[in-house]
Amino acid sequence: MRSRYETNDTKKTNDGRIVYKTKRYPNIPLRETDVYVATETGDRLDTLANYFYGHASLWWIIAAANNIHNAKFSFPDGTILRIPVQYIEIVNNQTNI
Image 1 (tube, one colour):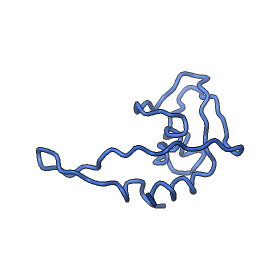
Image 2 (tube, helix red, strand yellow; image 1 turned 90 degrees about the horizontal axis):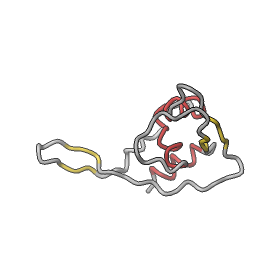
Image 3 (cartoon, one colour; image 1 turned 120 degrees about the vertical axis):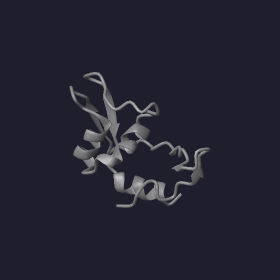
Image 4 (cartoon, helix red, strand yellow; image 1 turned 60 degrees about the vertical axis):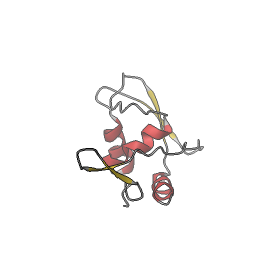
């Protein structure tokens, strides 16, 4: 699987470190195949991504699909989240930008 950072630009910080620039992903369109889940105690974006996609590192797909941009990883019980099932297509589209 390709890294989502593969096409990110980098920049040099004032202290000389090389870091990735922030990258905003386009909206992930709704599809009839999307799955909706009600979160339970302990659910986090990374654990949901691991369950649905087999890779915890794909948490950003669920975050983007649900317009979550504040690095919130856990949720109150019963929070409804959309899980896009076409994650391979999403990863390929994002790394080809």
